[in-house]
Length: 333
Image (cartoon, rainbow, N blue to C red; front, side, top):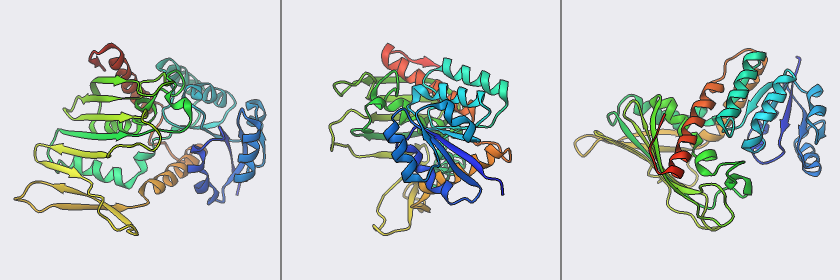
């Protein structure tokens, strides 16, 4: 069996969500890793069994067939375009790019080359998220709905996440999953409004605030997030759906050794509550399904669930949120 030679650009943390699942396949070879830090590239290659490591992209291309782009967001577009120029199938971590101009440049190169391309929206493969999507679309609590998510904490350790030009803060890099999944569930967005601020000294990004996205369907996504709190400080997480006919909530009352989690559809005291179960490993399993799909996409055997259009559309909503936070105005989409 001819093996697909996989390369990685960026020897950080996120590739480790993909590599264990690739390692289970007998049709994949860990061919090379590139990172600007030579010692990090060397250590990563040794730990994960890559045959080659380098600090130069030009040295990576002859050795691989497909690449995982896992560098900070602002550098995605350059890596994607260079990979496509060298004839490689590309998996890009989310967000696809930092700006719409970069997204346009990626689209032009994809149109020119016709090469396989996939964006890492893992929640589209997550059985928990797909289960609540099904409940919403089946109007279990009526439509339209309000999806409310509160997540306050310190955020990722790497400082680039809260650098506006590189990572864009939590609404760019953290909430992108919610935004993509809301577009997947509700359809096109109508407008966005955000009351944003910067909590942490040294952050250049908006690292806290509340954003509301209204969809053409009438559904609404409300995100109250921060990556600006002190280390060891976090708020209570809220994740729920409200509709005119009920609520979807997560009780988190499972035993510590439970193999399943569940959410509850509550339609009021006159109707019995409905429990919907999902594997506790839903997200990990989602990463496995996602990267297995990319192998088939790279081989030309499948089309990706999320490609350029999905990457572009979620980015447009994110940028509208950030524009609203800076202008204190509603931004139409």
